[in-house]
Picture 1: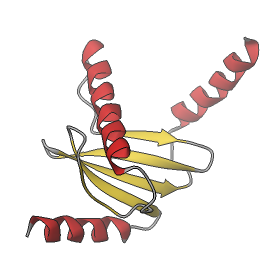
Picture 2 (picture 1 turned 45 degrees about the vertical axis):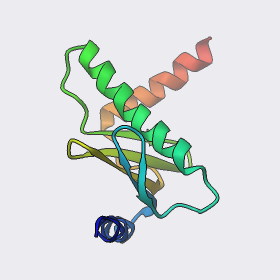
Picture 3 (picture 1 turned 180 degrees about the vertical axis):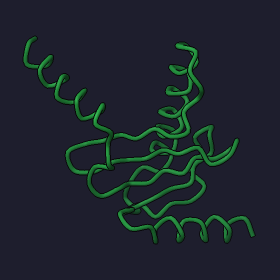
Picture 4 (picture 1 turned 180 degrees about the horizontal axis):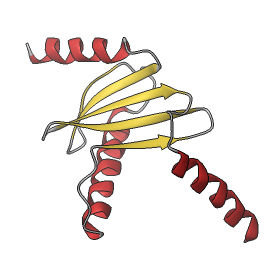
Length: 119
């Protein structure tokens, strides 16, 4: 019954426009289900997704900010969103393209390029 419920959620996530692959991962890094290419390393991906989210939570705590609800990795070709799904789970989605970003982030990206070119 649990496997069926996980499968249902994976199908719902995959149905979202822009999602190319997805996974449900426990917050301690265990893969529960996914729609990824069968050739990828499931345990490693699950562990790294959980580590990424936990690291963001720790960084937020250090600066006395609220824990993140999501962490998004943005590359030139796409994005990966790691989103808290309750106290025990993370939803991980591979997205086509870049998600819409705020003007502040766009300004920071430009400044980062300037800084990178200065050193």
